[in-house]
Image 1 (cartoon, one colour):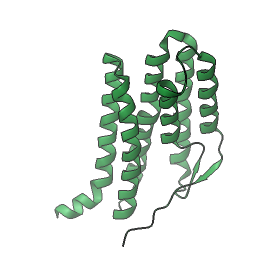
Image 2 (cartoon, helix red, strand yellow):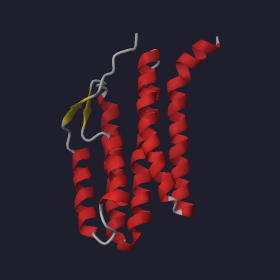
Image 3 (spheres, helix red, strand yellow):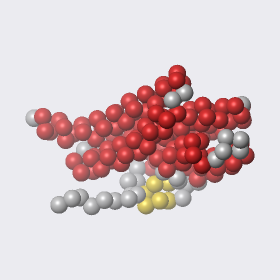
Image 4 (tube, helix red, strand yellow):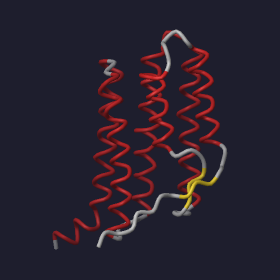
Length: 178
């Protein structure tokens, strides 16, 4: 009895844990400006994103609810949290950066909505959400000097365009372990 429940809900439970972590990171960014914690959580959520999909395929528990929860997780962990992190790190650049981060989150939302509605598990359209979110986090924390707003702007616009342009990417497929 317990094992059937676990098989049915393991992947969604992992996804809900990832959503909880992303919410924690967002709240910490807003209240404490905890950039390091948020950075760590975004990268941890990338692992969680891979794990929940693997579990769903491995246990045969893939579902519409799971796909929607995964999209919510991706929006929070790789859209909202990196956008908030960008505002905390680059907020001194004013309205221009606010509009750019809003555009990033909206592009992520559009990319994820298109993915959920497409219903083709073998390919992705546009830059994958984890890659886009982690790229923004790295740009804000490591790649550029804080006094280079043009570099940030160009880099973020390229990420936004790559999320919106519907080029196909074959989804990695890991063979089941024996």
